[in-house]
Image (cartoon, protein in one colour):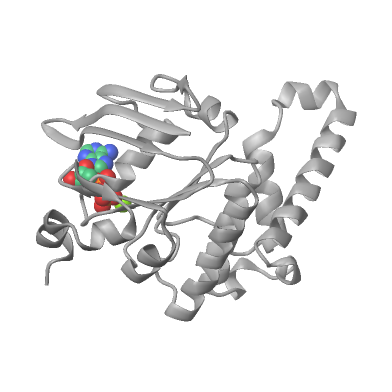
Length: 249
Ligand code: ADP
Ligand code: MG
């Protein structure tokens, strides 16, 4: 599903991502771990097209997206969440999703002016999609609550819903469980498993090691921009290079 070949991203003299090659299989949970500054978010920014590689290639289902614009990569089926998601605090959960969907899919102003029927149809599509993804993430009962009034874990679910609204086949989740307590982390892990059951491919960056070890099919370990290991949770746990560089202590 995702194939990366010799991917490098330089920021000035710094190789934030340094010659990484890796393959992630479809319909699996793939995790990326590594210390702060290892290049994890930069890796996501390259896959989603927010940054362009200095060198190397990124293939999604065989299509080379290395030089593609991020909206075209999104259209190919790559969705993402960010380390911190900005939501409209004084708007309802449902309105956040409707606006989010409109921003990602709406036609230009000119289309709207000359075709009000199209506008109404698109509004209905956004409303229906918002209700659908809200149900998927288990927040139907909170549609009319203000963002300011919901919990941190519920905000994470809204961020998932925003990403799901564009119908991705590959979902990039940047630290989806950061800032939520252990009980709630389990709920988010279950939601990711549900995505897999519905045919999605998940790629996540996460610091919560017990969560990753319990749910990932494959783990890639980054350090200083380089891939230092990859394998199943059992392989990673017993890899001396990883223990030395990262898990050590
Ligand atoms: P991680 O997500 O693993 O914590 P990042 O990918 O955010 O790491 O960062 C990797 C390295 O690249 C860090 O040294 C960071 O300072 C640097 N970096 C990230 N984004 C930029 C940028 N837009 N411009 C310059 N340097 C950056
Ligand atoms: Mg990061």
